[in-house]
Amino acid sequence: MNSQVKRSTNKLKTILRRIFQTAGVIIIVAILLSGIGRVYQSAAEAKDQQQYPPPGQMVDIGGYRLHLYCTGQGSPTVVLESGLAGPALEWALVQQKLEKTTRVCSYDRAGLGWSEAGPMPRTSQEMVNELHALLGNGGIEGPYVLVGHSLGGFNVRLFAHEYPDETAGIVLVASGNEHEDDRMPAEYKKIEESNMQTDRLLIALARFGITRLAGNAGLLSSYTNLLNKFPQEIREKFIALTFYRPQYWSTAYAEMSALSESKAQMAVTGSLGDLPLVVLSGSPDVSRLPVSFPVEQIQRTFQDLQVELAGLSTQSTHIVCETCDHYIPMTDPDQVLDAINQELAKLPH
Image: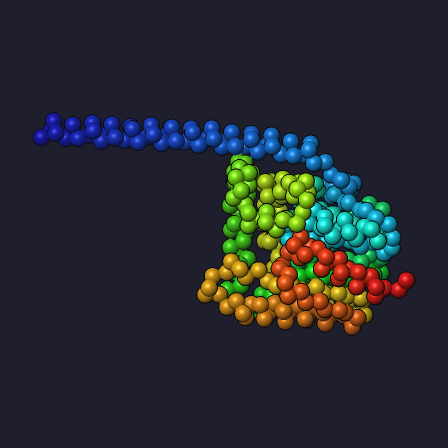
């Protein structure tokens, strides 16, 4: 009996020893692979920075620098404000056409594109403070026509509220509305929660070069297909400076995390009075929603909220693009150009 117990004990020890040895090997391999992944990602980012230098100026706004890219001649200057986690390159197709008739500036918010990271939280108020400092320190004189896409719609409205003398007009492109959470069905909130979880995962994957490898293998098509109208050179630059970088996903997560606070900040802005306003509405992205979601209610509520945005000014025009998706600056740039030109036509000459 004692010998049987001894043999069983020895067998158990042998099994445990092998388990620990195997686990140790797995841990060592994982550490080595993660180290290799970090080195690969770091080297690739350094190569991207060398290959894609900033086309505009890097402007210090108080301890960190933002990238500002202005082209064309004319007045007033059109300032392009991107959607959530959108780099200046979001506007590349729009800016290339608009610069033929007037002065136009795009820029990278802190932590995006060529810009350095900025303070937290990434609320609309923080972004507006930074944009005002950027335009001032960059020597770009107002008043400005402010064009805001999605989250950028919050930012340009808040800018106009705080700096009315520096705002000549506003164009809202598929803009967010601060009343979305109250008016949309509960399922809509799950979309934001799901996006935040995805961003958190992509932060980790990007640090080890996995998103870069996935992109090179064509596995990020749900993101990169938005760039199908872009020339190859701009498309490659856009992808390298966004989807392949952990800082991009960290900033996306930070902006999304502060979204509720940004909406609360918008609640105090009120009417735009008689400020010239153009609202360009597309359609919410419902293609990937579960069949159980109230899609028709989401679409109807979205359009109602867009109508309410147009009602913020007594001098407004509402353009509804039935064929446009949410990402209009990238997928339908001519629609944006037309909306901006309609805005410019409202202004005194």
